[in-house]
Amino acid sequence: MKVTRINAGEFGSNCWLVIDETAYDAVVIDPSPEIGVIKEAIERRGVKIRCVLLTHSHFDHMTSCDALRDLTSSPLAVHVGDAEGLVNSYLNCSRVFMDADIVYRPAEILLKDGDEVSFGALTLRVIHTPGHTKGSSCFLIGDSLFTGDTLFDGSVGRCDLPGGNSYELERSLEKIKAFSSDLKLFTGHGSNTTLEKQKAYNPYLR
Ligand SMILES: [Zn+2]
Ligand SMILES: [Zn+2]
Image 1: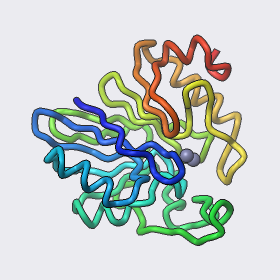
Image 2: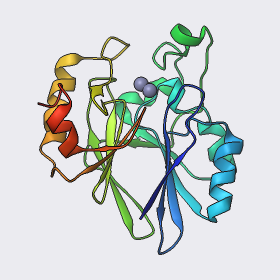
Image 3: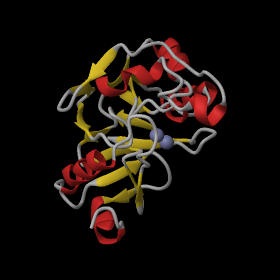
């Protein structure tokens, strides 16, 4: 398994290309950069995209979600609790932050907690972690967790946007804390880290 950060988009949201190196099948998590940047990354590695996944449906994490579906003919998956954000500019926050109605096509796959998406020899498991948004989810692949805006290096996502709930976030963080400490964390903004480090110095995880 190989994890590559495709350059973050305009708003600093991380986009991940996760590759199964046996079959060169891959998934893209949070297609935030312009489509040309993602296309180049895919073509350079010669991988076949099997699914595009959103950790949540905020506008800054899904800039190329329509264009990438068109390019790769792969489905888009998001937790059912965030399905509405694709088609609603209030929920996806583009109305508030961009003064624009940015919307996309609905998702082909609606995820729930425990669902699995397989590509090549790898399996991604959906861990529903509401709090930042209703449908915010982390994706577990092997010993790596893609946390979206639920958990950052030293911090957590805000809970004051539509669908946010600080009590739910607390419960979601408890869920994450239960994983093995050597879990690698790939966050929605900022740098990679590990659960062990976050347990040591992230005030929200102590
Ligand atoms: Zn967000
Ligand atoms: Zn974000």
